[in-house]
Image (cartoon, rainbow, N blue to C red; front, side, top):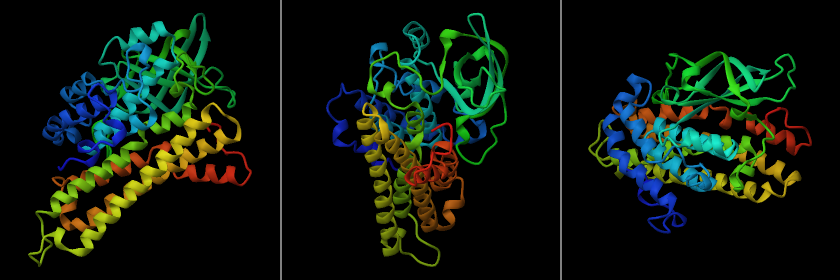
Length: 397
């Protein structure tokens, strides 16, 4: 696969110097490209990343991108973070998905007590799997909670050392505030049910726990939580930041697909003609159009995040609008990425249906990523309701 422009040509804001944490993260992604390419064919069969690949990602610091500086992390800005996730996703969708999830969950260092966060992140290979797709029970007991439940989509579950779950102290009350509880690896049972079409290498299995004691220091509110670190990242709306952590994955997959198609077009001709794909004007137009679509989607995301950052400490209606706009930018980016991969696959012809073709994997992976609630078309409804003077229609806004 040809390398993406995201990896070989970082944007100017990312090339301040070799000591810059973003430059180091991008260089780490670039350095891992040969290993990922060599082992990619095994991702689907194993339905998880091989230990060697996962450990290399951890050792490169790609699961610590949002760890606070005070705890020894790089504490990347949201835009810097997205660039790294895009670059990883351009190499492989499953790799990018786990970098987005793992690197994104390192932000919990800004919400947990410092002693707990330092203890957990002292292990450089720590990976925190999370699931917000179901709600368990958290019965209050002396010193904490007794937690039980089953949660889906635990990306990276087989390699996780901690599991963040949603639970309710009052399950009989649907309006009761939810809390995030952190379970250890030994507390959970992983259910081997990740048999899917796309993002197969993420190992996003269901997992369950029964009557596990969680100390109060290992829990915090799901919404309205108070940061323990001063950085802007930890003051931003948690639901918006959570969604942002993976929004770069579809764009990165699409960017990698453009690079792969360009390589293919320089080698392949369509049946019945000797002309290479690259020499056909319609193919040239498709490549140009997909590049424009991808850049437009990215620009929309960047614009909405810039406004969210500016509105975070302002609050009020401005922050509500900013949060809604981030949501529709996420959904739009996923749709644009799917369209890009579809257009390229159509131009590639029958070659794109073979598993040996990078476009086949890209098409599967981008559609799987777009199914995530963070990029759901329902985001358009929420933004539309607010623009029409209605409430958002969801308790998780």
